[in-house]
Image 1 (cartoon, rainbow, N blue to C red):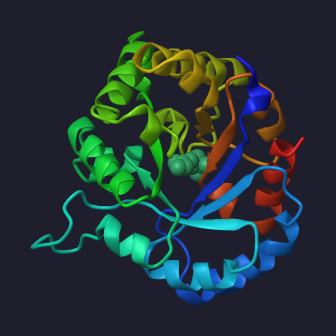
Image 2 (image 1 turned 60 degrees about the vertical axis):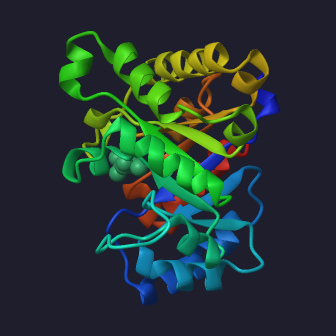
Amino acid sequence: MNKQKRTPVIAGNWKMNKTPAETFAFINEVKPLVADADCKVVFCVPFVDLAPAIEAAKGSNIAIGAQNCHFEKSGAFTGEISAEMLKSMDVEYVIIGHSERRQYFAETNETVNKRTRAALAEGLKVILCVGETLAEREAGITSEIVSMQLKVALNGISADELENIIIAYEPVWAIGTGKTATSDQAEEVCAILRNLVKELYSENEAEKIVIQYGGSMNAGNADELLSKPDVDGGLIGGASLKSNDFSIIVKAASK
Ligand code: 13P
């Protein structure tokens, strides 16, 4: 399938890093470094950083996203944020189902599906994360695990809605560990996921959907990972906190 039909997306996931003041300064600093990007550039920031990030990114090619949202519209859910709240602030993207949410906050395939549907219903673009643990990879069940995660997450989602979904393949063992998947390992799983989209929807949808790799992607390895036919971008943790490193990854995706 033709990679040229897809625009790569490089998204930073700041996780629990940076204060509002640091956010405002950082986005202003990174703006000129990515201004001529030939790919989409997104920063997914903590909730309290959304307003300063949006303010600083105004008029630039940087889009801003959140890192989670709840599936209910409103109500007694202490500490949660709804998709409608995000949309009302002009947030464009939201990460759903990150492995840290699954690991530490009891996120399941079912709640990932509910959150995805709620976000899409509000018109947000979803970066949907899937990925296997080291034990699952060693047991030889990577394909089954990521396929199950994706299938359940996409349950009830139409082909039209799929246009607002980016899939992020993030092997849990490669996140924050400095252990990157080899480009062949990344390609293998991204191709499995694209094939599954073809089975669930059609060849056309499979050819259009952007599939990112995430897990210790950095300025040194981005080129190689992004050269693979089914790797359309990256979801970047640590390296998205440094403007120079991040801009090198954006340049690699812009080729
Ligand atoms: P690192 O790039 O720090 O490994 O994090 C990847 C990630 O989890 C992005 O969502």
